[in-house]
Image (cartoon, rainbow, N blue to C red):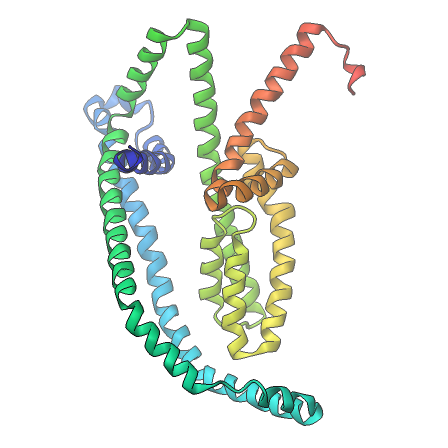
Length: 349
């Protein structure tokens, strides 16, 4: 059942994400006053806005690839040229250390690889595991094809949802009022609007925060002449889409890349990352994302930790806006009960 519904769930997620920039494009290209002046043009605002949004997303993706792909090529060339020197430095360091500490020679001589056993084990693995490897490869290929197919079906479904979202919203409201009591239907619609507004602000805030962090890393790394500044900054910006802790993934890759070039610079990069990460966690993220979803900084951190420990990366992405909705509903409920009880303000001041 989940497999059948997967393309449509993917489509709803794509539609929800694309709807955020699409609303901004529609409001800029087709203001409300245009409806009176050019009613025919205003009637086709939805497909035109959708086309502009898709072109905008494609342009951003291609711009990122245009920046990243050449940088990736240059980075791999530099790493390939620098790895032999890095290995020689490690060997020289080990030789000097072995002279200073004779115990290492005895340890090193006692840990030489037994090549006969390694060859025998490798041959046995190749002989007995060939079928498993083939089956695993076929499974991976099937999974990739299924994912691509689900994405394409979901994308087509998302386009339909975005083009007909007013009609779909109208039909959902009719269903709610037809099968639920009026007060419950009103409350359900209000909570749905609150959730939609909160998740939309979270998506835009998260993208803005990732862009700020990437630009900040590129500027500082360029000033202090760190290698691979563009590559690492773009990587950190993309991984920073995972709330609070995502940039650590980019940091780990950046340290490995710089380590081949200079271990000292890798250490200074770690120091730089920790400083900028503190700035991001304490000032940028709580104010850009926390304020956009109406959630205090402390609860943003709490939501990310709980979501990550429970549902992994997906939990990190969805727990912040979900907690924001729950926080807003709880605040309204508390204020309503205090007002009903007529509790003096000085009691909880």
